[in-house]
Image (cartoon, rainbow, N blue to C red; front, side, top):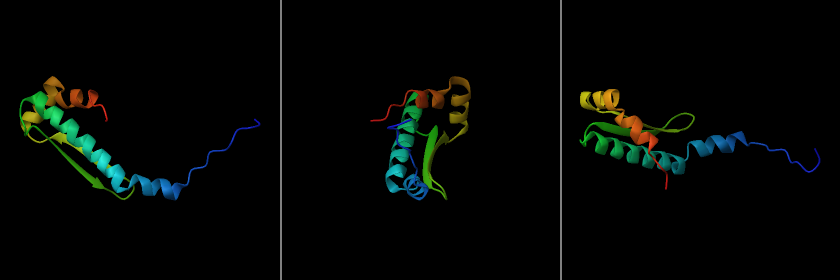
Length: 90
C-alpha cells in the first residue's frame, strides 16, 4: 500500500536494551513493589522475597514465597497473585 513504511528491528540494539541497567532497574522496582504488597497482604514482612539479575539475553526479576507461610498464603489466599494483579506502574 502506498504511504506505508516498513518497520525494521535492529536486533542487536534491541537485545542490548533488554540487558540495560534501565530495564533492570524498572524490573527491580516492580518486583520490590509487588513483594512489599504481597507481604502487606500476608501480614508479615518475611512471607515473600524478590531478586533480580541480568542474564545472558535479558534482565529478569522474580517474586516468590520466602517461607512455608508465604507458600501457604499464596496457595490458600492467592496473596502474591493478588499483589501482582493490583500492581500499577508509576
